[in-house]
Length: 204
Image (cartoon, rainbow, N blue to C red; front, side, top):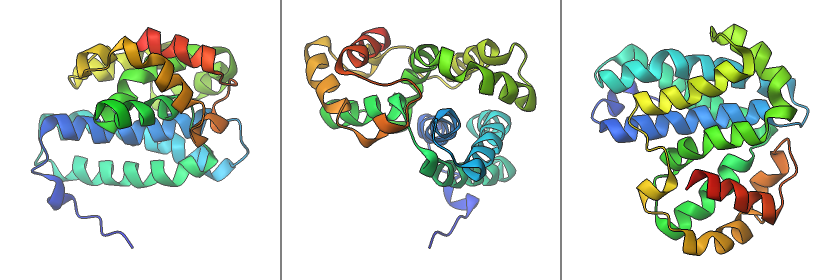
């Protein structure tokens, strides 16, 4: 049982508001990207993305905005419900990074998201062309990918893993750990140690 009371979140620091909110966004994005069949999760993920788009910037700007906080709690619940459809490369990368370098999970997800969207582009373009229209984002998939980076920038998320302390000397270890992560099974493009290494390099 979970009690969701937005008043309990008003004291969260802005970086934690951003990181946790973008974790909810990553859950929805990866569930929506997953090739597995689960229409209910697909719909939940789409509406979860809309709530984050509309209300995370407000919660970040004003931590006492209870309407925005409440909608973000709903988005977080929706993301965790939706990802029974699957996660993907974002989480497969973020889990070992957090274990080795003690980075914040949601912030790490956000840093990895633009590169993973580009990596998965051919497999997810059509569904995000549709999603972008619902979300009020122009330019289909390309517009959505640009929006993801712009949202990161707006919320003070670093652009590279190097900025949160990740070093290239552990990339082989990170790729070996990532390929064992259950999240790999939900990525729309088959993951290998080699293409994971490439993704880690891009994110550094």
